[in-house]
Structure formats: structure tokens, C-alpha cells
Amino acid sequence: MDIGTPLKTSSSQDTETCKIKFNPFATGFKEDPYTTYRLLRQHEPIHRALDMWVVTKYQDITHVLASDAVSVNYIPQYIIQQNAGDIPGIVELGEKAIVFTDPPEHGRLRRLASQAFNTISIQAHTFYIQQLIETLIGPKINAESINFAQIAHQIPLLTISHLLDIPDEYIGVLDENLHRVRLVLEPGLLTKLRIRRIEDDLQVCLELFLDIIQYRQSHLGEDLLSKLIQARIGEDKLSHRELAIACVMTYVAGHETSKGLLGNGVLAFATHPHQWSIFRDGKVSSKQVVDEILRFDPPLQQTVRLAVSNLQVGQQTIGKGEKMLLCIASANRDEDQFANADDFDITRDASSQIAFGHGMHNCIGQMLARLEAQFLLSYLVKHVQQIELSSTDYRWIDDGFITRTLSYLPVNLKSA
Image (cartoon, rainbow, N blue to C red; front, side, top):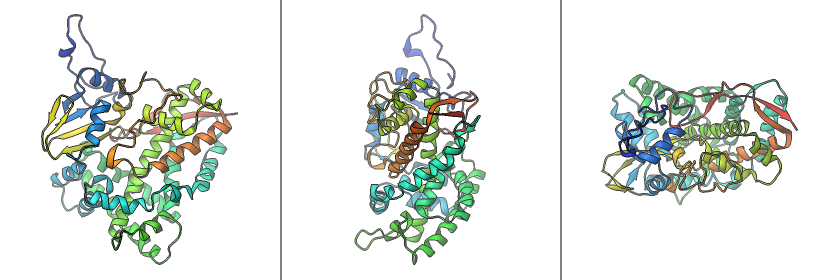
């Protein structure tokens, strides 16, 4: 049975004979992946499809994410195996990006990056983020209809650019090229032609960042790039190439997750107006609301791991060399972890959600995404009485299934 198709059973059919075919490319999956996740959890929580094990239960997924028997380097390996030609930038990305590296290199890169990506460094830019949100949204309140997906795109793009102190004339070029580089996270879509195009786009961005880094080396400031340049562990520091890779991944990972969090959150409130009323009553903190948005509809839906040794997951032995697709969004809807899991309920304690990962590879930039979301919610709850869809024709970005973000979200923001 393809994803997006209701599970059909006859009155005499045993649940053990219900076969669910996981197909994230099927019509309707992007619009509603959660029905399929639920069916998989109920009938086949560790499911074989697409030459990998699809894992959907919370306890199984957190077990894998915390295990030292898995590697995050599958995607770079897969891309290299496609024999798409000379792709030194993508190879370097696989060797030096925190998201793709295993210990001990992962620990080294993370410790250095954490000297810049910390709460104090991020919170030093809170005034800019608050002003940006006011500038982008204030004139749109009471407009007949706005595409909030565009605003959700701009907030993290401009915030990251400000934090790294990227010159304004470079932001458009980076946005266009890095959007395509993001497809490295979608191995199922990577033809040889797309891989070569990603390599070209990546090289444009790396050269641009290397120029900025060379200049910043002698013009240090209070921005995050300056702090990354100055990060040290003894005599060890990030090379210029490693700094450029860090900048690329700050945009690729940080922009996409933040954009999804902001847009998906506004959609959740537009389709659950009673929850917006509860929030406006002031009885629930914005931090708690952000956790529930992340649980209910996380921007990162899935992540991939490669078994480097035999691993027991639930009742299934995963053999060395086998791949696992960990459905994070399914884990966040697991009824054994969250009561009434398909309900959007901002009064619940959703702090155990794993939208930003779990274990050593949890998202290093999640504090920034959370801050952007909390500031957005604080502004909206102060100025907006109702969030309504101006059309039900909202649309999801369709170039992949690892992430779930909106390309079009028409809403009315009615003033308080």
C-alpha cells in the first residue's frame, strides 16, 4: 500500500497480513505523512523499504541516535558512490561538516564551534532579531492576505546573515545557491546531474565565504564568524576551509529548520484557533509552545544512519552496513510517549520531543531557531488577535521528503 492511501482491511483480515509500503514519493505523502507514520507504528514499526530500515517508534529512534554503533556519514558516501565526476567540495563537506562526521572528528569540530554557538553569543543579537520580526510583520497586520512562508524564509536568512556579519550584497547569491546545496540532505533525489550542479553551487559559496574569512581575519568583531575564527582548543583551531564549511552548514541546516519551525507553527495556530486563544490568555510560555510546535510538525522529518556494527533495534537485528531511516516526526507522534499525540495541544509538556535530534548529533544551532520562534510568537501574541487562513491552498516545498517546510501559506493576521 502506497503512502497517502488509507489502509484497507477486510473483516477477516488479520493485522499481521496488513502490508504497508513506505513510499515518500507517493501522491499525498507530503501533505499528510502522519497517517502513514501512525500505521507503521501500529503494524510494522521497523519496516523494510527503499533499501533501508524505516524506524518509527520513539524508543527505537532515540536508542539508535544515542548508539555508538551507527554513523552519520552515509549521505556523503552515497553521493561519492554515484560517480558523478570530480566533486571535491562535496567530499570536503562530508569530511568537515559537523552533521556528517563521526567521532573523534565530530567531537573536535563541535567543541570548537560551540565556543561561538553558545547562548551568550546568540543572545547578544536578540535586539536585531526582534526588530527584524517587527519590520517584516508589522506592516502586514490586517492586510487582506500575506504569504507567511516568505516571511518565515526571510527571518532566519537575514538573522544568520546578521550573526555572521555577511555583507548585504552577498545574501541573495548565498540564498539562491545554498537552497540547491540543501539537496545534499535528500539522497533519494540526487541524480548525477543534480550532484554536479550542487558541486558548482557549493564551490560558489565556499569561495565567497573564503573571501569573507580572509578579510575578517584582520577585522575581527563580535559576530559569530569572528568568534569561530578565534575558537581554540590548545593550539587547535578551525582552518579557513573548515570555517567556510561551517558557514555553509549554518545556512543549510539553520535556515531550513528555522523556516520550517516558524511557518509550521503559524499554520498550526491558523488551523487550531482555540490553541491561539489559550496562548493569548497568557497561561502558557512561548518556550512551551515552541516545544509543542516542534513535536506536532517538525521541519526535519527524518534522518539517516548507517550501522557500523550489528545493532538490535526493538525485535529487529540491523546488520553492519545496513541503512536506517529514522522518522523523527513519527517519534514525536508516538502515542506511547505523548498522550493524544495527533492533537496540537500547547498545554502539554512536549520537552521530550526530538525535533532537533538526540544524542551527540543534536542540532548545535537549535538555540537560535528557538529564539527566533519565541520572539515571533511573543510579537504575534501582543499584536494579533486572530491568525486565519485566507485560503486553504497552502503548499509544501516538494523537492524532498527529509524536511517539511511551506512554500505558500496565505494567512490573515488580525490585530488585537
